Length: 364
Ligand code: SF4
Picture 1 (cartoon, helix red, strand yellow):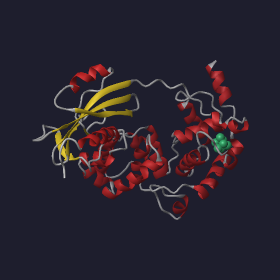
Picture 2 (tube, rainbow, N blue to C red):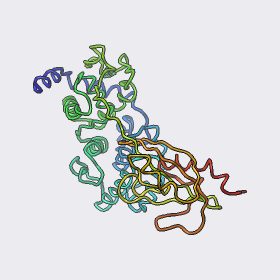
Picture 3 (cartoon, helix red, strand yellow):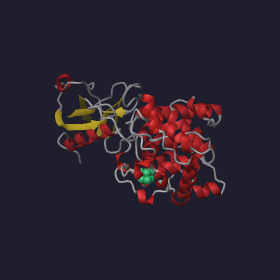
Picture 4 (tube, helix red, strand yellow):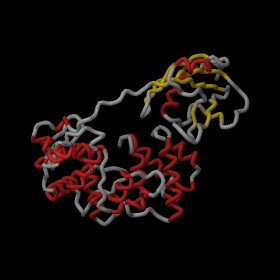
């Protein structure tokens, strides 16, 4: 039964060469200008992408948008223009520069990977070699191999998945369809200009083959698109219903001193927001009552409640504010509350606390 279904799904085969030629012609004219990209004109002029730049952009772009990454990417490159410079930086500085981009384990792996590459002299130029580096998964290895080294690696991000699901009208819902979508992409992937093909598909997904209202009329591969032929473009990719995210509860303490500083704590090296600075607080637990007893501690007053959504759960954090002084304990530091850069959830908590700070001191 399963085999039969698969056979029906792959029965549609657009001519791969025609698809590639149409996509290249469109990409050559319409490629997005991105700070990390060597565009088709530069490539034609003999400019090659810098593997460090490709790697950095691919890691930064995971789970977030081009618009959010672009300014941060420039900042990173100014701070650390080479992989050797990044490798030589203290990990705390890398984490601080990453603040707000989320997924902090990625920043730690970024630093580890930079050290590994600096130690071996350069980035490996094959998917297998890249996969062996810390923090580089199948997608990132394929993206670097294709974009930086023009290897015919099959690069399938969310945009490429959507384009493939539509071209071939793949009925299997995501995420189960992922392996099939990769096979499908492989069936039309060219041996030449692999990096441009990957970036062309990404651009197509980002600009025309968009999630809600695909602009099929302007699409260079519309002649090959089964979902369009059926008039069902926006119905692909199919998706399995999302699981409900649970909610966790916690308390964060915002302690200010008379100099306008706040007491922060470096989080443990493992777990969520590993190694980042944050407000001291309770564990994040499944029941609000379980987080509450610790909130009764000391002379704190309630500043508010902030909500934040992580990949696997929602968090409700009660923020308590108080006045303090003196030395900080181990792993704690007093820092300027106005200028410190924090992970988004901690920034929300700090903002809630800053609103109540005025009453704590007569600051002039
Ligand atoms: Fe996407 Fe429409 Fe192009 Fe098909 S024709 S690939 S649905 S934009």
